[in-house]
Length: 500
Ligand code: GLU
Image (cartoon, rainbow, N blue to C red):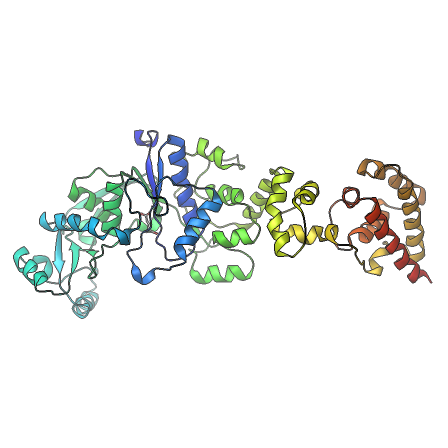
């Protein structure tokens, strides 16, 4: 059911834990947030949820920021740019959470727990033996507040747990799945503040979402099991809940099971990746990443497949999100990359491929690449292919394999004769353009009773000296008369050696 809150200016957030690199799932969550914010004239917030210091990866924050920038998903408030609710890094908000934990203790929705790891483990074993659901079964839940406060004051190690009702049920509402009812007896007295005084996600995220005025929470389906706890927390405070949107998960390309770390590593060996940073290095366009991932969990009309970010801002809607898990399909990724490459103007494509030339040590100018771009645009799948296809443009000379100059079904002498005539006709051309070259060479093919592929194959090999290359006449036009003819003459010499 649509909510009137979907069309008023929303406040949404992407709240990654900086524990690893930005991946596809994160990019999709960030994008859906961004789309709704831009569509409604609302705000998109970046927040780092770094309360789990054990899993903190110092490289992750910068990678998340760089990845989102590369995708073109800008935020209005965040750890790097500040905002009215700064700081946006949970580890810097420790003092913000304290009064809220205190409030839950005070109202009887939470309790101090002094149980040691060993005690908890013993209880767990007992429950297991009785085939009972594992949940907190220690004595602290029933301690008097005075006794608990005295032990805290005496410096005893403790955590704070949410006091889950033991009876009754709670019905929560997810935008993709509707109402879901949970029996409270199946829920736990979850830890909400750890012994180091830092709240866990369950408390910190709820407090932050409330304080930051978050209207819609987009997060992964893995949060559904603790979703009732989150709603219990909202209700304990008497706050208005956000719209909850639990996004489907991504499955392995085979469709069998969720992606694991091992799958990710195996994929990388085959040049497939779920990490945004690697996609950039592999020659994918941010436009293609967005288009591909947008459709993994959302559709517009089941037939439109090409979307720019602006299109998505216009067309995105919560009601067309799909709760079923989607397998990651890398062939589609290539397909979308091709579509978006072909949608780029030549100068823009040149700008995007330039870094790959620099990396390959090929001295290509933006101007030259702009002329070359239309020749390769139609067949390109990833940007990193460009240097390999077009390296011959930037060499002083090329050295074709002599055997490649002998056309199929011709011998070296016949190939030589054909090439000599072709060179003669090209030399006679008053102007060196694609349009001027093609008719006389096609006429020559006819006269010699050859197939076009035979003559043009020789020329292509002479000009580019590589197995795949862009269209011949356009390539010769870009290379220019002098360079092209020099290469053709070199090929003549190589053929002559084979005839002697
Ligand atoms: N820090 C949580 C995560 O990375 C965020 C979940 C949420 O968006 O609420 O999974």
